[in-house]
Image (cartoon, rainbow, N blue to C red):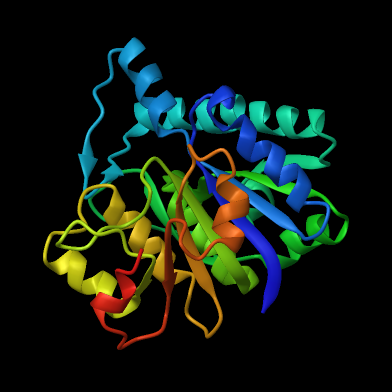
Length: 265
């Protein structure tokens, strides 16, 4: 199992996540890091300026050609460049890329969502070269589908696909909530695949949290691997996600644990 840390950040302003970038700079001194970023809010803002309406299905953005052009410009041209620049200001040897570069993210089209793809494989030698050289890969979630068409990729899915392809022990998905809650409203400190599927089936987990959980489950297919859903607003969000078992929700592949124990705060 790899000690590579795969971290997913949202695509909000740098000011909102400066504290996490400070922590990334510290973590990157001791272990390899791949940082995957989203950009949903900023994409929506740009689409609104251009008079293009956003549509979502199951928490995922439906992407036509006009929306894809905006998404690619915002993700690769704006958010990615900002993050790379800000990390380099912190002494991190950051390199910006998308899944299109080197064809390192292998993806297939998601039916019914237009130009949206799902990560099904990884050309890991491409990333390994960067990580062995001590560089932090900052990844925009774009990839070519099976026909070679550039598509938008959900950032959680991209991060999970990279984590699975690298055999990473830890995947951290930063979000704007403090974790996943059960039917009684209790935050789950840990959650198994069985529990996740049950909560989705019951409609407790819904909206944009569903693809996030599905992505996390795809990255924890072996013993010892974990995905952490954590609140990015905490001043020590990354440190706590990596070390504090009470922070956020930890998802593992283990099956059969009861929900009461998982609900312990």
